[in-house]
Image (cartoon, helix red, strand yellow):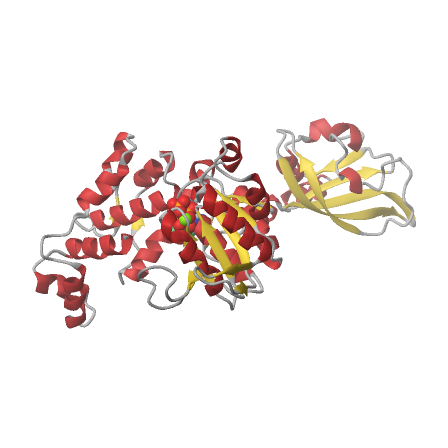
Length: 441
Ligand SMILES: Nc1ncnc2c1ncn2[C@@H]1O[C@H](COP(=O)(O)OP(=O)(O)OP(=O)(O)O)[C@@H](O)[C@H]1O
Ligand SMILES: [Mg+2]
């Protein structure tokens, strides 16, 4: 008998067995290990009084102490709380123990599958949603919202701080929508002077104003059968808001200087980094226009609220730059990554993208291919906020060496950038810096 017990204990399988009154009479060594309970604590006791909620939880066949007669062989997963309070997932096989033809008790053989379940949950998380990078719950929610709003042609208002990816999200909604084969036309309402915005949006006919030598389509017409992205909509003047409201409501408008009505089939997506409710209260934004464009609001979280995504984003940008610069994918050291994780990113993803690019170029000077803290912009190390200066000051290309000359040299060198740098008499780092600066604009 002792031999048999030793044998059972040597087999790396967790077993618990109890009689028909749920009195535990066997608990293997591996069962002790997985559950955290010792034999002394469980043997001879009612399974339900030892383990909170019973060992098998809701799946238990002995809940009411009445034996389920059909009990033959059961397999199920159990969510189990171990002695230390940790949640574990167990896969159990329950078999009856017979004494002759009569059931004497039950035996559960179980395995700890917690890590498999957790990995599965991790795998289910999307890390790259059509080019939008992020694995945090906030981003998972955003992906689900994007998928939903893409299907229907309702107006969406994207809200988010500067650099959070509003345009990227707008573009993704378009790409996943039934209008994907139509145009995606973006208008930065904040960047167009008030005097020009009307002609920019609705177009004009020849002679509409001095200088209108021929007719021109506006963005509303160009977006026909596609999506019109009205970026920085919070910056539109009150006068223009009225016109915009009318055009969005009816999807008809006239070109400047013409009375002919033009009707278009477009989906409107707008974006702003302003708090529009506040702008409404201040009298700067029309409430009726707000309700028209904000049928579905989509909020993009700032990077500081999803810092767990920083390593993923850094990795993504490093790969992107490596492909663009035709070089091996650089690495980033642990201390450098820690600095990036600590920063608060007021400029969000765009700031991170610039920092990665800047540091990559800086890293060429010393340790080729590994970004160290020393390669990061100084303001990150000193905790300052004024980052623009650093990025731009450092990346100033040499006098008389513009991008065209660099491109020409690369072409003459058959695409070999090291050779091109030699031909130009500059270091490889400088060549990359010029390419990087050009790309940044
Ligand atoms: N989640 C993301 N994954 C990968 N790249 C991103 C992500 N979010 C933004 N980007 C990149 O960051 C840059 C800034 O994004 P985008 O222009 O869409 O931001 P924005 O919110 O429109 O900024 P702004 O308010 O300044 O106009 C772009 O190059 C974009 O591709
Ligand atoms: Mg934008």
